[in-house]
Length: 441
Image 1 (cartoon, one colour):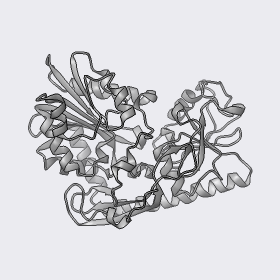
Image 2 (cartoon, rainbow, N blue to C red; image 1 turned 180 degrees about the horizontal axis):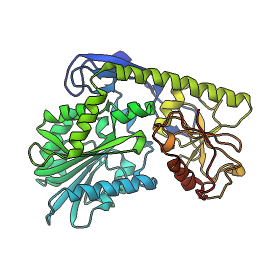
Image 3 (tube, rainbow, N blue to C red; image 1 turned 120 degrees about the vertical axis):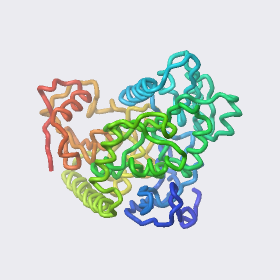
Image 4 (cartoon, rainbow, N blue to C red; image 1 turned 60 degrees about the horizontal axis):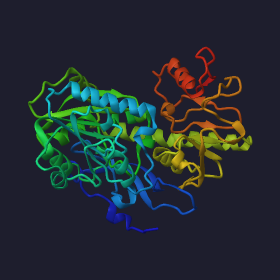
């Protein structure tokens, strides 16, 4: 294991505006990186803390983790594995195309292309370029793209691979917040974009994260946590602006921004309305972030007490999904293989491995003993569900014996019962008339 001087990794200036007016908000401790391994070797360990820039209102990690440690060939997330994500990526392509004047020779670039699922939604008439640093994903993406660049993005590398070809569409999905130097990144992106081109960025939305208390969004890869306010402040530096915006519930709350050169397109009402909403909650006010930190600590204690209670009752506890976000939650709450029997996972590449940070074994969704089978009709009388945090996303569902209790205490009060019933139906294939027992703390 490599050892770093953590102090040397600490940032002194805001990543977006270079201000030194940074203020500590929350520390989740020093945590192991997310990794899934066969043996017992622990990953590298780094601080996981967030700070607020009092000048541009960007919430961000206090430390930079070396990219070589984060993006290895063991990186687990694969876009095409999840039906919801496949639909989401198709929608991104369709909606971005609808905002662009169509022409015969179009070029689309996907930065952080993963396995190429997004690019596969373009027609053969579109020249597709995928940029993906992880070799195993780049190989798969290459089957769906005209050109694949197996490296981190920069404009010089781009032009060396595709000549003078510029992009009409540039998609940056769930990776913009990973940029250690977002100004250099945006400057490079603008260099490869046609004058009337569109940049589509989708990422976690800060206001939703605060509202849903989704602290498991805080991971070592995600260096920044953007609001519309902080993102617009950054884009202005590059003569770019958001002309349309959409908000959805992906990953505890995300927002999709459609960006072009300033003055190229009319600003939508959706953008204006979100600006108004953000002004009302006052994201410039430190109090909203300190309140978030207090709720995080409170919910950590709640969950820890619940687990302890269940263990005293000799319950067997499983988690649904071996994920990076789950890794944050498990470590922060002090949960490991002594309290969690196994992680139930649909990605076959993770089966037989462990969540390296906590030693929890990873098993198939259809596992021995028949405790849980996603395709088998199971009477709700035998089970109840338990959702922790904003776990409509499915990052932590606690399975114990033949009961799973559903706890909506961390979910927005506006969440409707029929949505929970719909989720239960999708998981177990049962009729909505036979819903699970809903237990709200």
